[in-house]
Image (cartoon, helix red, strand yellow):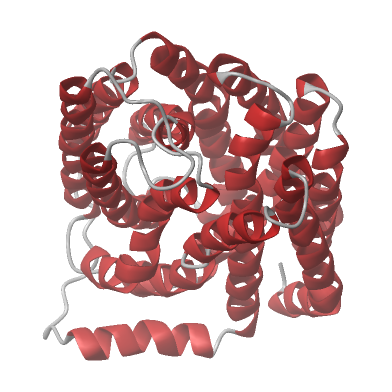
Length: 419
């Protein structure tokens, strides 16, 4: 076991990277709206961030189970620092920005450059996050994983959804290139923190390296683990519907609620308190209800938050709704990730985790594109504000059906696992 003194440094590094991710939550999509008002094209920017999960999740798992996970995290943080630096320079050299257009993009060259940087950032995130999740079980005893994950995600949420969006909104309102430059510095700092961690985090070396056989072992383990399969499918579909909501929300708050970048960032920051509370309460909730029942209710309640969004009369009400979603989302993550970390052997953790996350995260780009296509397709037939609410309604219906269809299977699965 690696000394526990390494855990605080690991958590701080994760907090710094998630602060940068939180800044990016606002910046990527908002930057797209400064170049185009086409919902489908606006969706393409976050698609570029999520598409690598579909393309590289499996290779990331194989590599994570071959190399020192600390070095992999270090390399990916450096790569993201470089990519954000390139994005900052691209925006700076393109000033002043042309007004956004209804069809196409006002500045195709800049749009393409930012899409390329987003692809690099998204690809590095796939490898970095997979390695980070496989490192945590080496830092804490298995019976403390729920507590460690809850604390880790609370710190991450402070950066990702409390401070990050607000900072990102203020930065992009001040200078459009500044949030990209800030992220470049943040990832460089995270790399420095990871560099200072002591010990090695490499899995046991294999006698031979055959990527087909290694991938087959990961696929086989997930195939023979019914509860893990179920969690992967639920998380994937849930993420699909969540991303439909996320991208529709950017245009909805601008055009229906009349919010600017700073107000939007503050609303997301306020919503983060729900996630932070969820991170600190998740361990107690899971112990009181059991993991199966906690997962069941978390999934069902998220559908309620989706359908409530278009009924929010103002930014404060919407922030409360989003905070409720963040709370139940953290409970779900605590259950599913802790179960994976506890049950999957260390030598297989990277590969099984990557297959799981291919199913879970690979659905995100589909949700983003579905949201943009739904609004674009409805625009000619419905008022704009009505069209912008359709992704919320579809997501609520989808998650409700998903919850009802998997309710009993989740309960049986966790009862049979002895959790």
